Length: 318
Image 1: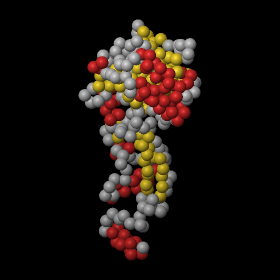
Image 2: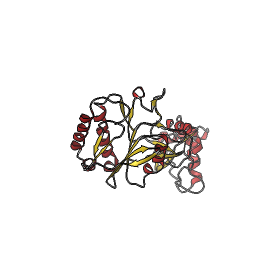
Image 3: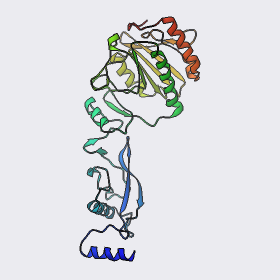
Image 4: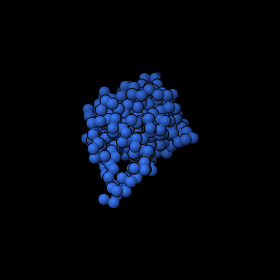
């Protein structure tokens, strides 16, 4: 230890940068949030922090950060230089006000973007699992809860996959990007589409996205206040999504809209409590059983509908 300090003193006298146990630098760990971008989430005194460094002195901290970046073989921060100085004169810590990754500004809820710009930013954020552009406004998904979204989502997917498994010419997609128009690029929780070769109204693009309106879309929403029942429903209606299903998990309600003459009409269950598709022969849903989590009953009712409709798909509805 004494030898290291003596060596360090000699190097300092010659103006040589020193990185040893006697010199300590401030470490600022940066986290990334899809909602806020890069920001300081924790500060620590690492084995290279000056013992006399005053953490309440933003100017001194920025000097230490700059010194570390000049002398380190690798940069201290994997973040753009535009984020520095990390702690301005106002004090510490401070959230970053212009979150960027390189030269691309990240997606944040409420941003108003064109669809090409939305896609450009989305591609630059591979860690972001779900973001949508609805009527020109960005919506970044929040963490997903189990009972309000995860479990209902899996039940809907299971119901649709059971239908697809015996129905040629249809495709089920889970959280797949749909290019509807210049201001709308949703990522529906689930969708059921008719293949273009079977008379479907959407297609798969060369870069492997859905373009145009799928015949049926399902969204899982907490309540009727969700944008799924407002801006998104308007976008789906205007672009010709023929059937729109919304499961309101917090309100224990299920809504099945059918597009007629340019407007959505809310379907009512029949006397057995079953809702029927007007586009896909045999696709039917036992709503009460679904809300109760009785998937055995849900699939049994679906099987009855498929049997009654006969095999195959005409692409023209029932």
